[in-house]
Length: 350
Ligand code: DAH
Image (cartoon, rainbow, N blue to C red):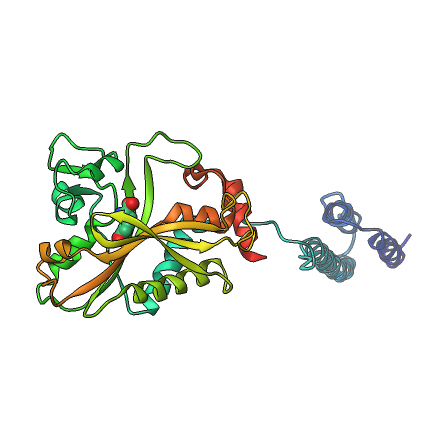
């Protein structure tokens, strides 16, 4: 067979074989077969020892031509393979945006915190400032200046945690923040503050009691303040937290720091006043205590009680949240059970 025929045969074979190449592996095997040391293209230039210079030149030219042609075919094939593989990769990595996403669990505020924030917002919208006080408090502020001198029987109602220092205690109410606020206001100007915070009492923990709980205290001092002002303010709170249809009522009570003192009741949101287990058949639910600031308290804090008057109130934050969200156990607020959080998040989004 002369060289021309050999070349023709090689090209025909290569044209056929290149079509069945499926992978880079197939391609490199084929490269070896054609261009390797013993490959058919390489072998064309073997056994040229007995040929003339002219013939050697001619065969060299033909085999070089063939080699570059074969190279070109392999490069083309390699390029096509790469493109195919890239397409395959892109197809396999395609993101289906219609698939449901995996749920990422995010944190959210405790419902008690939410209620406190809502209360703060409501009072800020009525011109109140939010103030805080220390949880380790002086007996002087927690009791004495609030018209609860040592030995006063009303102290017993607040079974208090004392520290080793008999003048210091864990505050049993947020009312001492009233004292702090009035004392601090040296110019004795009108005041409107709301004071949310933790309080402590030596209660055994059960479904409705906790040794640590939260109160939201309010104080307004101005001239000619009456129970009617307190009633109007309480109405706003009741409607905001328990619905527009809520009615409110005052029930006579006793607190040493207010005179007169009242219990704050709202009409039952569950039975609309007919009587049910939530309101214990009375149609009314008590949500806090309040009253007109006792003149002794004003005087104790440097406000002349013949000129100034005020009202004060205290809500139990857990109690409000339990009623609002239908929670039966106060300990719910302090457990770290995420199912509870998720449950209320869902309720909020409904
Ligand atoms: N400090 C009271 C308590 O813990 C609640 C309270 C009642 C606060 C009447 C007040 C008030 O400011 O005027 O039971």
